[in-house]
Length: 121
Image (cartoon, rainbow, N blue to C red; front, side):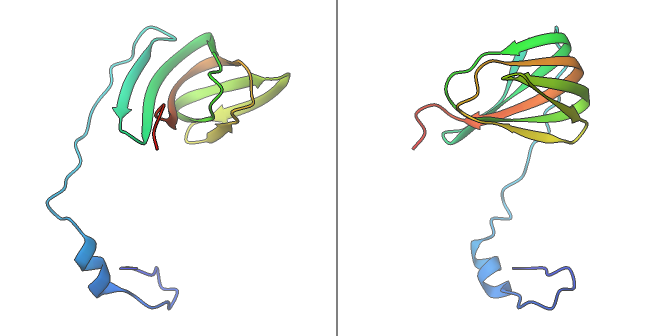
């Protein structure tokens, strides 16, 4: 722990500085809005992947038997799965279980779909 937000817990500064890699930096990527339902690959990593999906109207996300997470990064939408509706607004996230069948998204939103990269160990 390198910061405690005033909670009074012990800081582990020496250990934290041993594992930090200040030479690493992030890169900002901007994704242009695409046709509704067009999926853009945002991140591919051996352990996880993330896609961007622009929604306008209805869009069906087929099930591949794996769980995934949807985060609304713009707008708002309604998630319909197995006869149940959930509303997803800007900055909200929902977990779609692996056992869930097809999911239909309706509304006008940009979603980030995060999931385990297939065959990741």
